[in-house]
Structure formats: structure tokens, C-alpha cells
Amino acid sequence: MQIRPITDKYAVSPQIDPADVPAIKAAGFTTVICNRPDAEVPMELQSAVMRIAVEAAGLTFVDIPVSHQTLNLGMVEAQFAAIDASAGPVLAYCASGNRCSIVWSLGQAGKLPVDEIIATVARAGYDQSALRPQLEALSRR
Figure 1 (cartoon, rainbow, N blue to C red):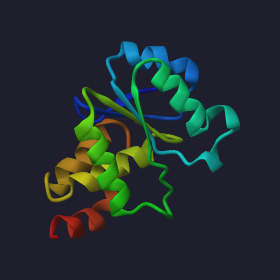
Figure 2: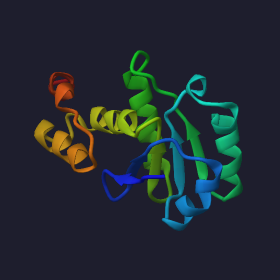
Figure 3: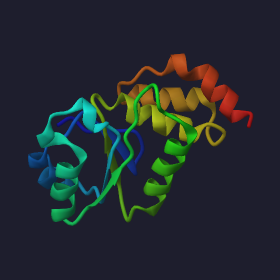
Figure 4: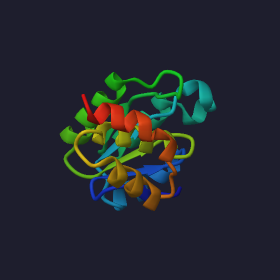
């Protein structure tokens, strides 16, 4: 498991495993968001299995499956509602953490300058320079 902080309250990770949940809790996360569709993973990593492991540890689990083809602003809004409702730091995961960082970036459009959004996720290892036109368009809404 490789946790990559985006902000003090939001971090992303590649796919987690139920065995990772104690370390996630020990790291101080209170909410785990699954951005990976079940069709991408074997049964033992699907959201229902992960929900059981996360909730058994006393953490909140939120399932917002995102694919590059289906990502929409409703999903971004749902992600930020979960972040805002969390009692503490949030860990979002997908295959590599990239989709989770894209969702965060889209949610920051209009709140932070586009250069700052791109630089923030770049520090976590994600190049989202290609997202610039979408971020700029959303910033003007």
C-alpha cells in the first residue's frame, strides 16, 4: 500500500487490501473512499468485501466507482460531500490513485488556481497537466 497525501485531509492510494485496513486506521484515516469499479478487481477486493473490512475497523466506507468514461460532476460532488462529512482524514483508492486525484482536482476547480491544483497533485506523483482545459473551463462556471 502506497499512500500519497494530496492535502492534510485527503490522500490517495493504489488498490488496498483488507489486510491494509489496520495500517490505514493507525495512520489516522477515518473514511475510506473506493473509486474503483468492481468490474476491475477480483471478488476478494470488491467494494462489498472492502466495506466489511473498513467498517469492522470502525471507519467509514464510501463507494463511488469511477471510470475515465463515466466520471461526471455528480461523482465529484459525492466525493467532496464524503470528504466534508468525514470526522478526519480521508483515503481514496483506485487502481493507481490517479482517478482519485483527478476527482480531487475537478472538485477544486474554481476554488484554487489551476496551476496550484496541477502542482498539488504533481507533488503526489500524478501528472494532470492534460486536465488543464477542463479545470479552466470549470473554473469559469
